[in-house]
Length: 169
Image (cartoon, rainbow, N blue to C red; front, side, top):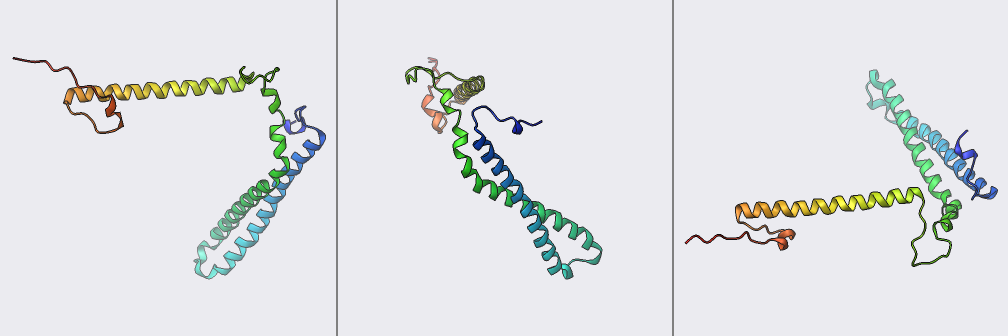
């Protein structure tokens, strides 16, 4: 049995019904779009039938029927979903109060779930990698400039320090 039939405890029966209504709207919108796509693609095929060579008509007919119904089904389901998601907008924030700490203290960091901790660690890791990449880019630029004695004109030029000159007398 899927998780759709065992909703979380934060949802009431009315919320479960509203989510089911949205899912039903998406499915019926997709089916209506498929029927409309079949009708429109078959009409288009009949209009342009004279321009299609005789030996390709069966393939073109099948392609227009399948392609037209798939595109129309997708667009109709997308439209139905976008229109009916307004019914369940408040359900997305149903468990948001659990992210705050018990004292509701703004100075104390809120307690995080395991998933939020993993996301935060990954973001810190990505920022660390970006800073290492930037430092390495500057080091390579400095090395290249010291080898060629030509400073670069880009935004990293502010980090340019000329190599020490050895005075030969």
